[in-house]
Image (cartoon, rainbow, N blue to C red; front, top):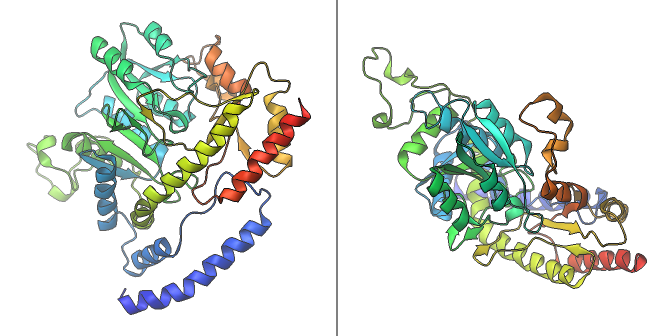
Length: 421
């Protein structure tokens, strides 16, 4: 679009979006929701430009967003996909893809028992044997002592989760991985911007998955990204992303000797179609420019809320390791075992008072109904996972949340605590 057209469009769109946001806010059930829509005129205009240019499928804006994201994450490159779950899927299939497999079908991969289920399905669908590791309820992350105990001769990989934006203790995990020759994958879907010892999460192994779902650190509505340590990983992921197709891939990473067909339709591996749309990337280009401001406000709100929680005797929040720099996705809490009320009582109170809540992901996934279908889901205790399942919940942390709303949130918690003193 021409500049004057964009100017005119902005004048039309701004009052429409402001009016829509006001109407939605007035109709909302919650005055403290999990999140607010954090996109504006810039994203909408960029998306309209894509539509008006008839470039709606993955194209230049997608590549621009990938490169900008890689620069932000301080990695070699990045591959955009249609969701964070698809990012987990491609990372898992990167390990067992037929063209250049890193692992064999049936090799064991360790995954924490508190996670989002598609991380587990991805590894299982890729032919790996999932073995669950307990979590440390004080951090919500993988219990490294239990991880060491779960190692077996068939263990070949670890699929970490930096839960709720709190980085895992990477020094010890890297030492274990080096000692036992294990590959590392990272689920960073809730941890965009988090660091361990100055290194962004997603840079410690073969790749890291990120989600751009509506309520995440930045949004493309649906969408995801995979960080890549080198061009070979990037191109393997590109092939897996689009049908096993060689299109837009460096041929030096794949053998096509003897192929006598149309070079534009060379297939070198199996694959999926989990490509993003250009419209999603259009959103991402402008969301990424807002990320620093968003992150600072999230940190300010989280610091204030957790300072209040630290003064209570009935809740605990995740402990942060000395080398970790969290990037909080939400505000996770555990009701202490000594508290005179249960998790359900505080959650029901908050919901009735207009504060939206959620469990911490799927809780202990072994207690989900789906567990009955798979041998990989053992019916054994996981004390840390059970603690999170029974006593954990979280509330939202929107970068658009006004400070006065945080005042009201803290007051709501104080009222509940005083009623149970």
